[in-house]
Length: 314
Image (cartoon, rainbow, N blue to C red):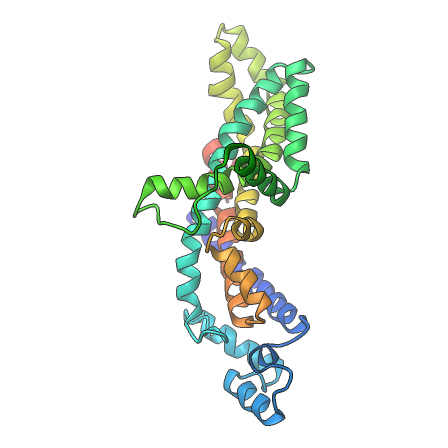
């Protein structure tokens, strides 16, 4: 297992290198530049040249990339072109909110999707099954920003309830933190639940057809033991795969939800930086998210061997 983890970590080097090059080039292709954003379109050529030299934007692209990556490899993601503050500190401080929102959304998704998926599999081709499949279809079809807007409208117009603005850390005031996070987490969790629900149903159905399930039932095991002690555990590998991918996607996909609910997370930080042409912030944040994403995938692969002892890493 240690050798496998080491190989996977070494494989991250070319993956993250490719991601970093892609991010850097994409930022250079965006129309406009930070110099025009800061100085305005009426700035003199001399003022533009001075600011470009200050930010290193007058260097060839490959030199700009090498300088950026050299700093990243030493833990220095650079400074914001707008605020002059170190980027890594802002990323870490805002990542806590995004991570909390992601994990709370995932938890809501699991408690909705896995039980309903199991019920749909056990009640295959009944009205219950069709109802669950319709719910899952709505979950994957309705955009989360549309659901968030609709939810806010219903709560404000029908119940005169307005979610608290801003953000309070979980460690400062857990109850107030939950009040602020529960609605955006519910929106993201229901969208995630649709895919997990469908995968749970199909995986359980596939496992229930296996010979070992018939053997366990023939030995007189109760249906609860068959489902939860044997079928669910063997069905968890594809479910875990899609959960891992969705958690990674949520880490970088909370931009709109954070904007709608005024949450100062990493997604809102990236969106603001894009609008301001603050390239180092966008590059650093996206690279950070990509690194976390591939580490989550590595963790999912390691969990496979725990769920299924037949899986070995040699």
